[in-house]
Length: 167
Image 1 (cartoon, rainbow, N blue to C red):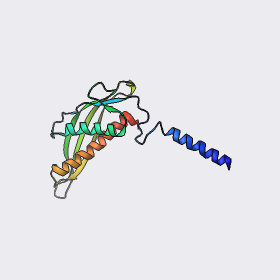
Image 2 (image 1 turned 45 degrees about the vertical axis):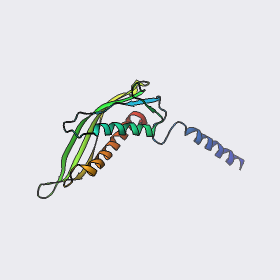
Image 3 (image 1 turned 30 degrees about the vertical axis):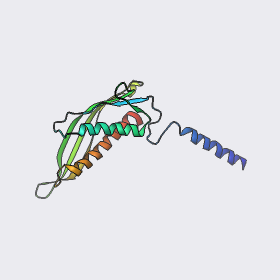
Image 4 (image 1 turned 90 degrees about the horizontal axis):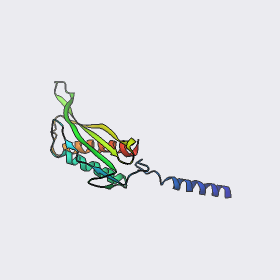
């Protein structure tokens, strides 16, 4: 009986001790204290006003919510820089009379990530995602907001995973 109590105490201590290195986001131990997200300029051929600011703020919020890093305007240990390179609406499926039944909004964002404390983590990579919507709907108002939220949620999480979570 004493062996079982001793064994469970040791296992409990090991489990509690190991929890200090990892967190639920998978970011583990980060060798930085600050981060900065520079403004992601919209350089796509088709311009949707305001998405550059929306994406920049979404990426900042995601990193703040999933890490203990402090957001700074300049001189960050981690720097996210880039641009929106593509904003495209394309027909996806057709009806029997050759009309579009579904459209797809696709957004592509180029990211340059710099880790001043660990240069091997630096990358220059493009991230993209899409949102499909019925062709009889205009990409405005609630439809546009839903599309942008879904696309930016996915892209910002992919950027986080590539830069910090190492998944």
